[in-house]
Amino acid sequence: MSNNTWGNYKGEIKGVRIEALHDDPTAKVPPYHPPAEKEFISAMQSIAIRFGKLADKDENGIWVGYESRAKNENYAIGVRCENCAHFESANVCKIIKAKIEPGGYCRLAAIPSELVNKNKKK
Ligand code: SF4
Image 1 (cartoon, helix red, strand yellow):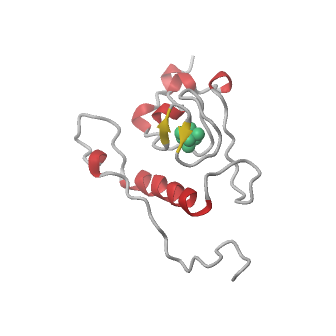
Image 2 (tube, rainbow, N blue to C red; image 1 turned 30 degrees about the horizontal axis):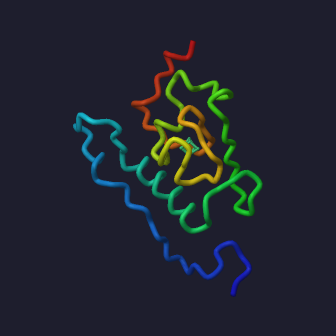
């Protein structure tokens, strides 16, 4: 058994398929996830499946930086868990361990640009 990060994985990535539901850019129901974003979402969910859900200072070395609704300074522009592709339910994220809030967010957020409106900042 190897002691490195990749262990016995042997390069067999168990990718996550994002449902075809939001593949159509002309679809009336947002969000549409463009190919690059889908790759980003898939990569993060694959990491969580393979290594377990992420937390700050775990052995995975990925800083999550989760902030609660009360500390989310970008809530107004749409940067929040409920808009994120990894949002599973009111308190559950598909990729991080922490108990979340719909209005919280983290550094790994995967939020379609159509759901972010910088003009709402102030
Ligand atoms: S913003 Fe972060 S914590 Fe919230 S659902 Fe997305 S990945 Fe999970």
